[in-house]
Length: 336
Image (tube, rainbow, N blue to C red; front, side, top):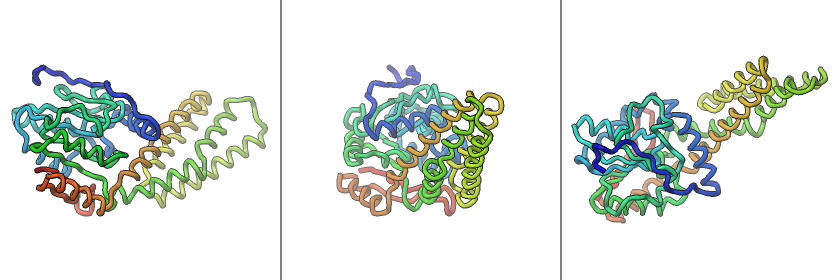
């Protein structure tokens, strides 16, 4: 089908992963269904801008009309949209694809976007098994995606296969010296407080259940309230020491809304709380996945050297700062 006639398509031909990878994939699928464009949506409104956008536009500058771009770990298609906009500004089209192991469907779920026409998405597709012919891809892009692979070596070899000896691959990678990494320990500490130490969601469930069920003794109700309020106070105190723990702010919002709903309909409040727990537990899973993805300088240099040894002698590894003191990770441009 001619590129100019091809509307947005979403392919679901691959099977879902199993085991721990399935849990992670489901957690990411739920994030993309929430409509966020990318995983930095709390810090960057809309699509990527600043130095991040400049890095990707520099990569797109090297492409000619109708050349193929494949974004791995695409989420809701932030980089494909950047590529499409760049091509439009030059009066040309690229053959743009977005690949993700999660069950994505950006035209359905992504919010605040204009059009995905001309972009093909491949849902439930692992980066270790890409549906493209050898040497058929001019540019592979990956922002905060490649490093999440549990099998980086096969994933890298698959990227080498599809770009061949003429294509390029570009990565923005999570690094141990980035702002994201530096705030991660606060997020983990907050998760431990929420789920393991205070068990605040269980206590909220007990309190609301006491309102929904048969009348309890005044002493029993008072004990439930006291235990919940004590745990809440502990979390409020912890929040002041964990300013980067966004999951705490989200939990506070959910708890406040739950208790407000409980005044009118305890049963509806219990359902709301169940959904809130599901969302928070999925975020915890994504944070755990992130912790395993972050690369230290030794790993980054090793990946760079591996690309050079594979014949991509012009590969360049550099840090990327969105602003002074705001390191977002390291970029790796892989080229012959």
